[in-house]
Picture 1 (tube, one colour):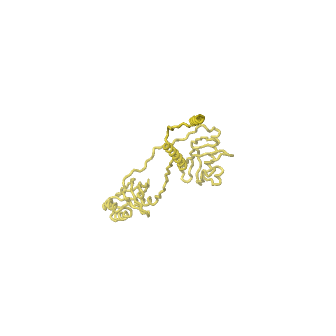
Picture 2 (tube, rainbow, N blue to C red; picture 1 turned 90 degrees about the horizontal axis):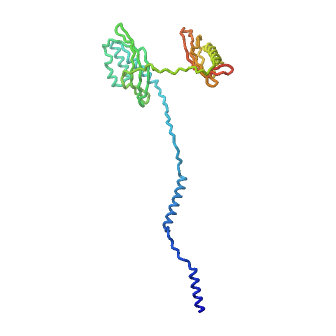
Picture 3 (cartoon, rainbow, N blue to C red; picture 1 turned 90 degrees about the vertical axis):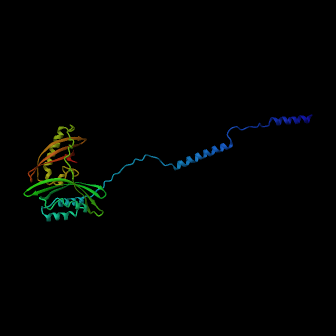
Length: 303
């Protein structure tokens, strides 16, 4: 009986401390591994992007336009020589033949043929060039230039003569070594006319008191009476920083015309016309100035 009890006791004890079986419910092992792979991949990619990222910023593009200076001296000289020969002839065969020979030095062969009969052997007039004006030289492309010019001609027929003024446009080709040839015949064109532009006139704005106006006026009258014959050294007492050059002219000061004064801080701006008598030509000369003056020990022109 004793042995049976002990056996049962052992069984009870064993049954009491036996761990219950736990059944796992949820994410499988493969899913967890997959999630870890995604997490690690994201972390590695983030670190890579951080080290390789390119700073993005707004780029403000600034267009720089370079001005290319073109020397048109040769083109202008070539054009003037052509104009003189093209519009000059005498009403005789020899002169007309000489004209055609001269034109061969300016025109393409096609244009020479085109101009063969423009001045005929029996033409009743003679022509001489009085004046030539070059109005513009514009670059059409890399090697072509358009020139607008005016020519003044004296046309004579028998005992009668008259002066005419005409404007034309031609095209010229310039090769790599600078040689020129006219590729388009003189074509009637328009000369620049007077513009109707009127600049805005300054007005006294009441910023300068009457005593200061009188002081500056007296200073300018003294200066401009002295100015025409003043040397550079003498000008330094009235003018700073070479604001006005010496002119060395035999002018006699007459008056200031309609001076206008405006104040800006401690400086005064003056618009003034100065009337002189030219002792050589006996003509009245009127010069216009825009001056900036300020007072140091006395009034001085600084600009």
